[in-house]
Length: 201
Image (cartoon, rainbow, N blue to C red; front, side, top):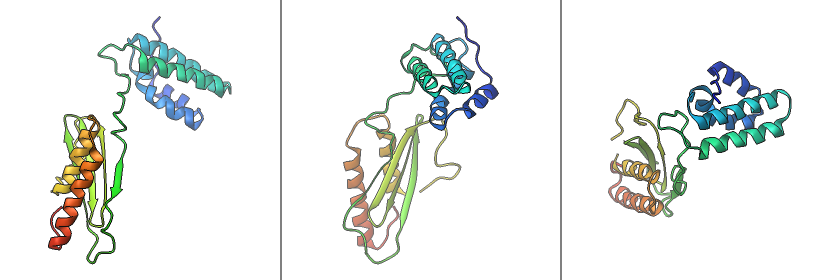
């Protein structure tokens, strides 16, 4: 049975009436609700989502939550055609998209200014950013995205942070000991930095 899509305004109005926790969960069904007109899985999920919105209007949040869970199940496990705009989310590999940060011990309290370097990396739709600070702190994060370069319109020229960003980008789709590699990279940078009194990161 074909279930008509919702207009963006209809979806947004219904979402605004929901309790915050449920409203956040409906956001991932936005394409299913408003664009995936001919996908069978999305049609079933859209029907459940309409019932969910109706349950909220009638003050039955428990039923709304159950219906939303069912809709999410169809989105996540159903067979979508290749042209469906509501593809299920790809599973993260060992939380590779979550931020990672740390601190190499032994570099605090040294004389001289505190210097931080940052950089970003983008390759085939996967992004990464990284930073390193002269007191031993470092961090990185990788994620998949569209063709936008996260560095923006300006190029950003430091090698250690660039390498951290590359590790973060790979970490979003590959499994390897990224933390040990990052710490070794930062440790080498800090030795060079403090030995020469300041080098380009």
